[in-house]
Image (cartoon, rainbow over all chains, first blue to last red):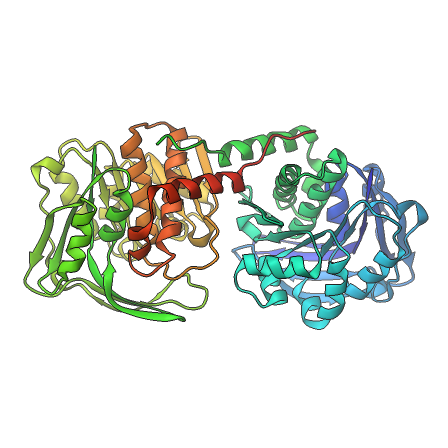
Length: 303
Length: 303
């Protein structure tokens, strides 16, 4: 029972209308692994520069996250700088410096080759290379973004073909398939080969498709969002962590996993960087899950 | 057991990227009454011009909707012309001609004065005047729009003070209260006096607030939307119709009523004007409600 994530570990500058934070821990693998670590063993495959902060490595170690696959190379760590407006939705990217990530060639350790695998949003060529190194992973989940859809569509489709679960934004699914209806977009993606499709809708939740099964869920409503960075990866970490922990591959269990991911994302955005993920306790997560169930549940018609 | 609606009965021109329809039956009272008529007796208070089409009056009569309060005056019927873009969300208003509606002075018949009352989106001065004519209505629900919030805020707040249920768009609640958090906006509106607040989120569903109770629900996902006009009033009609039919004022029943309204709105947008509302059968409504329950239901944590 373990999940391996291949993705970025980064140093971010994040600005909102209310605060600016520099060189804080970011990157898809960071959010994913810390979120997932509440429910299962997690291993990171990635690369950092020799400028990386030892304190940040200790964060992973404290949560028993396996970082033997996180290599340190000469050079600078992946750096992203972004600014959010008052609506705290899509940020403006002010700077992206790949640093040592530009020559990232992941090597999958033998003991990782049968894990559940999460391919975070990176170059589809690298995603494909990782897949070819795996033995028989229990489950393969995949994220991407418009940048790769526009530049490496063919290779991306080959990665989708080999994946079980494809997690993307609703707008990206439309871009990828050319379909405006989410049902037609889902059909097209099923035809590419992914059995399960999860469409993220930002502050409005997510939808999930598996054959004729369909699930729709709003986002957990929050009074105060501090920094939306990492919401999607925290979601994916909670989702795959839940499936890996329970080992139940039914659609009913996938629904609970999706809501669990939803809840993890709702915590992640309540503070900058991974700070809120580090502070929460399992009881708080369970409590929020229960509250969410109450606020979305309705009974049968009384007519 | 009856619901009275005070609002517009209109002749609309509606254009989408796919079709244009002229002089079709529109107006808040039309959508509301036809939606509500599935579950309770409905009475319309409004005004039409002498250009109005007899066929449209027969539509109301066929559904046993009481139009004794719908007066015919010399002049033209309220006319709205709007155009939707490809996203089929907020339309561009090309023309609004109030016609006989500009001198609308509603008179509430005696037999209407204890009904459940829906004050559709009209001038708060008229809404206030209607309220002062009522005796002891079972329930008072209220809609409005940014136009009135900007121009007649003080009078609108006096109407909210006398209402039980306030139904508006999420963005309008922010405009009215100056609060960006929906929870703070809800608190402010509770302080104005409305016990129950329903915030509509367009294609993303709705939220409902009552004291410490909170309910959130996505919209019913549709493969093909033809014309979004009237979605909000069809929603309100289904919601109040359900409450009036069941007579159950518990929050649990209000949740079902909200979902019932959601389902009625999902039908309304599947064709132009009120055409889909006229074609559906009660079994289809119940079936869609059940489907929606399946696609949003999830179980307890298995951890």
